[in-house]
Image (cartoon, rainbow, N blue to C red; front, side, top):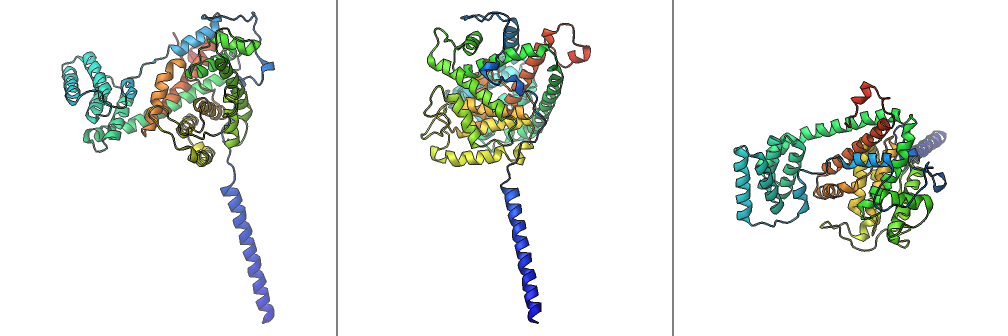
Length: 450
């Protein structure tokens, strides 16, 4: 009897130990395992040079120029980018946060706009709707009516959907806006899906084009164009040729401030660091701080790579208190490496990663550049080229961020998607122009820049 009891006790002890080991294994591997971004092999990281000793060689001497660009391909690429539509049908709404018109003025303007619409004078109606939205950006009736006009007269269901959302953000029980958005939201979701599909088609096409010799020439110029627009959004006034002169020769550019020089040098270092991170399995706080340290290291060595310790304001948006930043960044990193985030379309994932970091605003300065670099790190990991937000798109870029702060992040995701498509078009255009007559009819149907 005693032997049986001892045997059973030993068996129970062994089972308990095995169960404890299994629980430990599950806890360690499931809860603390760092998931990696599981996408295809990166193909575009070579768009970023590894170091200054591996810079591009030009077959003409570098000269410091002031206001003109003598490089034909660089000029062509930039002209393609800036020729993209810069007007936003609802830009007037996003400039103002508070009403500037009296109730009677708003009402009279709205009624006049509706009257012109009914009489078939769409151009005049559009001007009045824009004016009404500008002086009453929180008036749900104005926003809803303006959305209906854009949807019915201009067939711009995306802009209309954004207006319906904004109307509901100010007046959640607005019946007409609720009905309208129930109709438009699924349609817009389908359009966004088609946009991602188009991006993937262009990206696959570009992967075949990069095997051509002509792509090397385009790549050389696009790298400097990327730096030019990225620092330009923050107010840097260097031309493409001037910053190229700085990076190639290490010589100062006459008439430009020390800060402008340091912004260019810091961004270059950060882009080189991004290239090193492309094949890493995990994006953590160390990597994020490392990106910021390089972005701002030349400009402000003391605060570079360090979370802010003060309250900041971004327009009318107030980011979280600085005491909350460490915990918020821990949560951000967990989301960044989560399966939920990585299961999204890479462009959506990259855009949300950008917005979430800007929303936390963890640094005193350099948040935008750091966020855009993390966005491009994700895109590079997923096999897409890095995206640049043009200087000319600065207003639309900030407007989309402002809309996201109001609760609708889709316009910002859509903006990043359009920027991605724009960059793909730029690279494809550059390779096509560099090899005149070598493209077949099927390729011409992919992209047309005539």
